[in-house]
Image 1 (cartoon, rainbow, N blue to C red):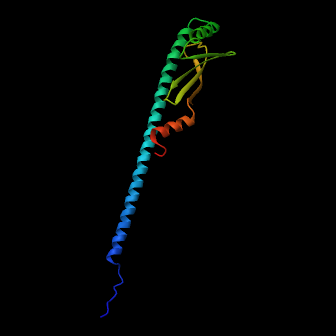
Image 2 (image 1 turned 180 degrees about the vertical axis):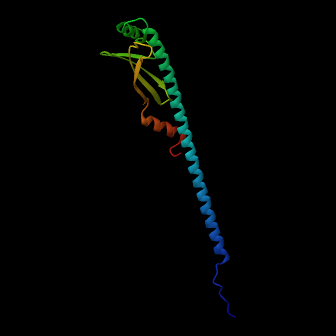
Image 3 (image 1 turned 90 degrees about the vertical axis):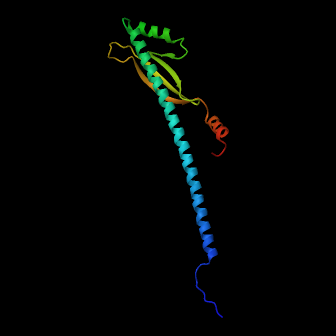
Length: 165
């Protein structure tokens, strides 16, 4: 008796194919989860850094507003020379502000911590406000400075999260 060949797939072959497809789906699901998790962490870190920067910027704006009030109050009824002399006396021993005279220019600078690795450094050139509408200072520098080296940052990240995270 002769057997007829149907030429189709055996039951075992289809089971192997289903197992392979299932393995591929699980692998892609795992990779998708890892990618989404990594993207979420990066987005969270970016949002935190942005929030820290804007908080420091708000503090700098508040300080600049306070300084503007101080400058305008000190300028009332004084000459330009006595105004800058009074400013130097007021800010030369201040721990928060750094007063510097560079020829005819008078500068005041301060830093605000953004986070444990960065500072917002602000430097202003002081002007004599001759009237209520004239400015009392010009902002000459408003930038983020790093207060640690990049090697320290990498070492801290490795200590916190491990080599691969």
